[in-house]
Image (tube, rainbow, N blue to C red; front, side, top):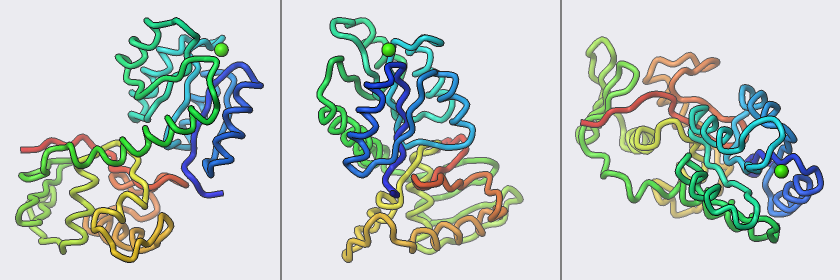
Length: 238
Ligand code: CA
């Protein structure tokens, strides 16, 4: 299976299994964790597209887990909370969760929420600033109007439009996983290449070369296995 990877942290094993099997029925890949500790450990090796967090965990306050997830990379988060725990929901959203589902819930409702949060994350593009101006990141800068990339040494390289659009899309959404499907969509490719089109990988490796990245250990443009790509840097726009 190659769908987006969803992590589920839920100490009730039956509920956790039900969530995972429902999501898998819709093409997602899942991993279930009973403890927050196991989830955080796994995040050092794998990056999910989204994390479902039960707020009532035995080893850590669920809200703290939500906060940790924000710090670990700004993962989209959906919280599961008990009926009537209004303050949990409000706090969860304040802590950076993207949505919540109240227990007991219909598994398909959770799938719908997952889908909509993922879509919102990917479509955030349209509501972001037009991306005009200059982006500064990791010692580099990129002037969007002239499509000029300036190296840390001050050398200027003019990028082609495809590369430039890709870089702009990444710079507008730093530290977030962007799927191949989303990145391909940027150009509105008429042929609808589908999420596993390889042309994006080719563009990405060209862009890495421009940025002087080691293809085996890229620092700025990371491949997130099974999920897509992420630009890892602080980006400032001027
Ligand atoms: Ca629980």
